[in-house]
Image (cartoon, rainbow, N blue to C red; front, top):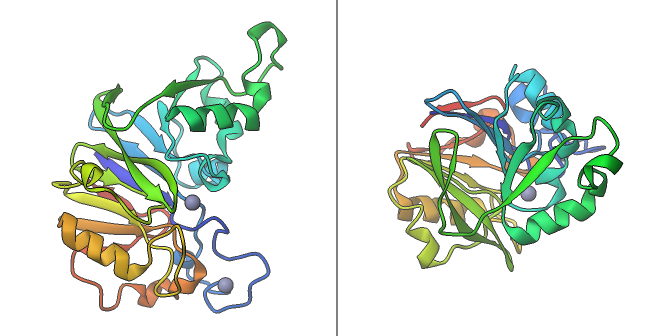
Length: 256
Ligand SMILES: [Zn+2]
Ligand SMILES: [Zn+2]
């Protein structure tokens, strides 16, 4: 499989609007971070999107993706779902299956209610989204892969992580319970969030927490996502990291 990190930034994106820091003013494209999203291309050729950020349209255009088969959603926060209206070109012919846990599906319906009215009353052209409820620890099939959803804690909020073959994809995690850690262990590729280096946050891991997590999981490769501008210039950000760890940048591809 091949994973493309289409967005490696936190909810503000980088640059932050109006910020004059050196990261936000950097000319290095790797210091430009869209909101979190990734495209998984399976061995069978399916394109599975993980989270649909408000930057979805630009992310698809920049990465030259013209195919989309399904969407997995980790949680309902805007930086992970704000692009769902832009799925339109992929749902003209068939409904797009969107897999997430029930409470997030309910909230998505109230956020874009015009997509979910009865067919005869629906405005022509709106994206046709088929919300598919999934539950932690109950695997489901998407195209040619089996997806195992598990729970991670985004502060006090339980959200989803996904295990697909040797890939574990986690964003917006602060902690994980032992009963969920078992679904991450053994992953060769771990994608996980690092908000920033040191300054405490109630619902996101900092670098030391992520490194401790990597130490537990022992993947062959760990890739960090969901960064603020506070992580510093991408050119220096990997200095001093363990050999199996790397900060992502937008457009990065990973064989997994
Ligand atoms: Zn900045
Ligand atoms: Zn987020």
